[in-house]
Amino acid sequence: MQQRPYLVLSTVSSKKEAKKIADMLVRKKLAACVNIVPNVSSIFKWKGKVDQTRELLLVIKTDAQCFKRLEQTIRKNHSYQIPEIIGIPIGWGYRAYLNWINQSIKS
Image (cartoon, rainbow, N blue to C red; front, side, top):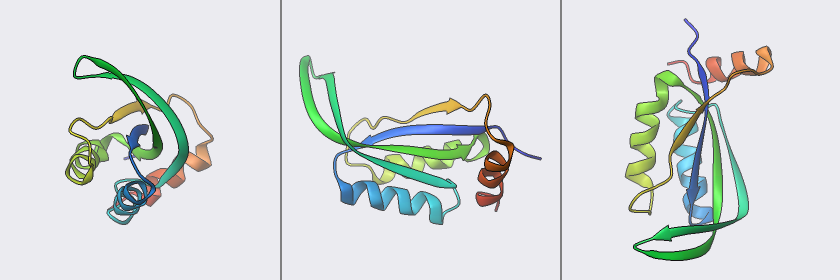
């Protein structure tokens, strides 16, 4: 049974951290692919103050069945106290690509 595909977004503080998490997710078959997008400017409120920093964005391709383990893996290996982990269901996509995601993360 094919699961519903998801994009998961997470920001990280360094290239080293991005590569470590991306590699781990793909090797554990929790993600078919992770894009690492550099030079993301983030402005956010933290501990009552507006802050600003440069981050890297992880764009993770997975499915609903993997989400809980994917979240646990990111949280365990992330440097932030509260990491961004946002899942967005993919409503439409090129069928061959969506099938590839599904095949890549099968146990």
